[in-house]
Amino acid sequence: MRLDKFVCKSTELTRMEAIQCIHSGEVFVNGEVATNEATQVHENNLVLLNGVKLKTRDFRYILMNKPAGTVCSNIDEVYPSLFNYLEVDKVSELHIAGRLDADTTGLVLITDDGRWSFNITLPTNDCRKIYRVKLSQAIPTELSQDLIAQFEKGLKLQGELGLTRPAKLEIITPKEVLLSITEGKFHQVKRMFSAVGNRVVGLHREQIGKVCLDLDVGQWRYLSKNEVESFNNN
Image (cartoon, rainbow, N blue to C red):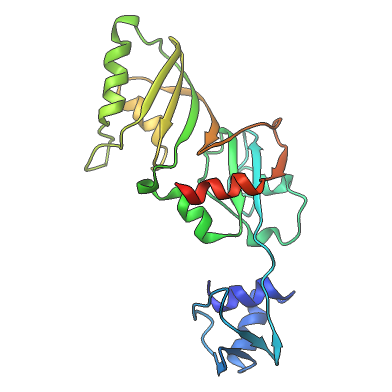
């Protein structure tokens, strides 16, 4: 973690105030003055501010059912930020582990633990995300197995050099499917169906890893210890 972030997570100082303290020589790391705010520190380092030992606040892990027409951003943009639904302190310290488009609904994970969210979003960790997808065109019954095989093999997306990672497609009805993927390219689900001549008209994320959505739209809760730790085992 950066030293300025460590100081902020251990005190009530703003980022600019923390940087000012660091530049003024008020912060020591393992017995030595540290004047560079980008210095990397860890939980086992001894960090002092004006002689007082600093200890970071516990990380937070939150699940939310994202409403349509909201953005996965800390600030309002064209659409309002989903963080408006959270009633927690220091919202600015939180970020999304795997964003959703403004018109996409469903499960989002919110945290201030960067290493944890990196575990979730790194494709090689094979953390599965399951989406319920509504399509504009019905999938012909005679082509369903071929389509399932195409998604399993990987698809060539416009503007991409290689194929997508293997994905699991389950056809519920001719116009509704479940799609399981382990990566999160820009607009990936929509681009995958575009690559096979179809169009997504509804998109809802139901599951990430072993964590399933169990809340009404706009609701949120903290993850259990077991849910948090399940992502460290990917």
